[in-house]
Image (cartoon, rainbow, N blue to C red; front, top):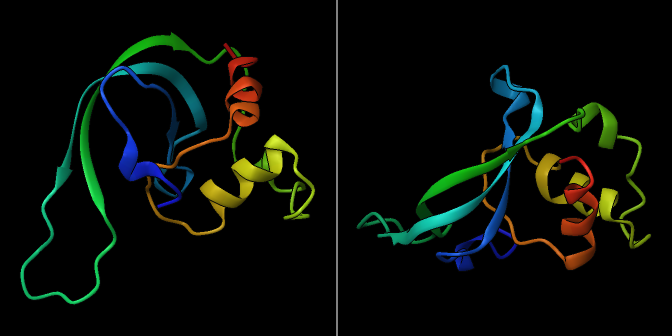
Length: 112
C-alpha cells in the first residue's frame, strides 16, 4: 500500500506499533536486512500486495508520535509531512508498509 511493496534490503524504515492493538505509534527506526514479496493466495481475484521483511533496529524513538499527534493534520493537499503520515498510516486501521517522501522521512528522523 502506498509504495510499500518496493521495500528492499538496505532501506531505512520507521516502525510504528499499532495503536489499535495497544501500541504507542512510532517506537523505532531500523535498516531492512531482508525483504521478499509474499506470494498471492490462489483463487482470489484481487489482493493487496504483501511483503515479508526482517529489520535490524538502529534507534528507539525519544518522543511520542502517534494517531493523537497526527490527527489534526487532515487537510490532505497541504503538502506537510505530518499530513502525509496521517493519510498513509491512519486513514485505514490496518497494519501496513508504506513508502514515504524524503520530507516525511526527514520529519520522522527528528524523533530519534
